[in-house]
Amino acid sequence: MKAKIFAVAAAMLLMTSDLALAQMRCTVSDPTGTPLNVRSRPNGPIVGALHNGTQVLLWKLVYVRGQPWAKVEPVGPGKTGWVFRKYLSCEPLFN
Image: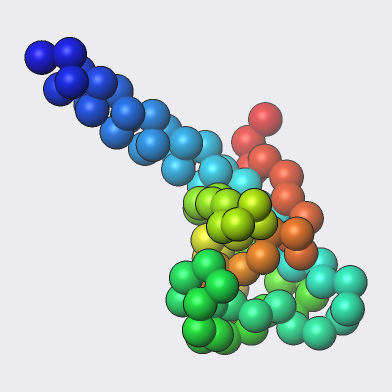
């Protein structure tokens, strides 16, 4: 019974953390000035690119080998996918 309660609590925590991150609006700000690669998974194949100044919603944040990756969805045109978090400037949508 305790294991079942723990599993439900863990699932709720994961859902809550995704909802909190979905409330972040970010702007692509790659200091190299080149488009930011959008990938199918963290460090995976490139599926598109986003230019500096593009606004995105941040849905999920994971660490791969100690490096932060963000799952983003462009507010306008562009590909949804994973980008290197270091190149996003973010703020909460709601205070």
